[in-house]
Image 1 (tube, rainbow, N blue to C red):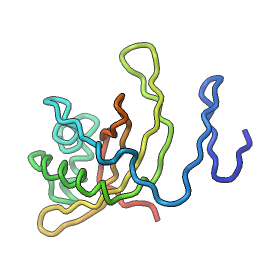
Image 2: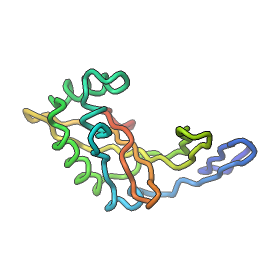
Image 3: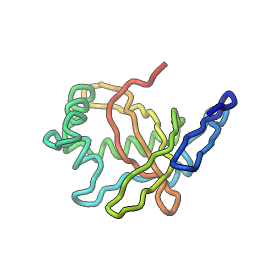
Image 4: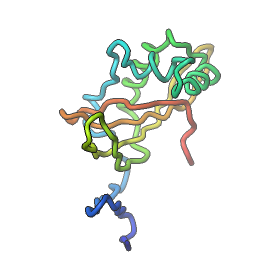
Length: 152
């Protein structure tokens, strides 16, 4: 599958999705509408990324504790900083994401990665990788996050 420079082709079954990463810096689409799910039991920060005994997110909680001094109770601080600083940050990478749901159909959509600077306890500061998808209203929502330095 040959492509022009700057173009990406992704084969998905019989269909090929073709996209071009725009030149220059771009913000997350509809960034002012971005949100982080906080429903009880589905809070992406408190119940996943900052929960040390979560089977898939526990290692992220350890990174947040080591790099920023954040514990599970610091979820609101992290939540507010991500949403406030997201307005000033650029999309670092985007890609097509296929997510199997409970039903037999597959959802296909774009996912976006944005690095956000976060201030921790005792003057600590580090970059946090955030990943976003668009909901049915085209509002970005956080899917995952972890402390990680951006690639050069």
